[in-house]
Amino acid sequence: MSASHFTLRLNNFLQGRYGSTFAAHFKYEDTSSGPQHLTVWTGTYFIDDMKYGDGSGASRRAAKEAAAQRTIEMLEAEGNDIPPS
Image (tube, rainbow, N blue to C red):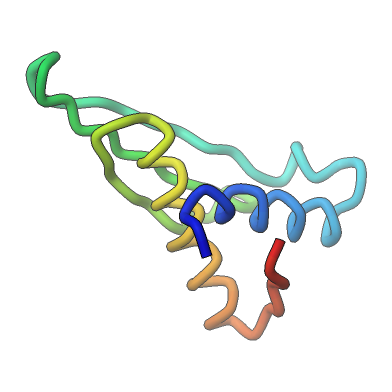
């Protein structure tokens, strides 16, 4: 599966779990570090104010996808079924 699908899978899961209020139950934060030509982005997902997955990458998108992948892994380890997109 392409890494670009992890954010979509996570969003679909959260919409299924929380319905139209899903946006109130999660947030995503990112930060960057390093010089401009070697920036490293780090992103973190929070669900109901609890920290879940975080990930890093050379771009904001890559960090978000890595964080979404880690969040999915954590949710599945808790017994949640997260279908492929």
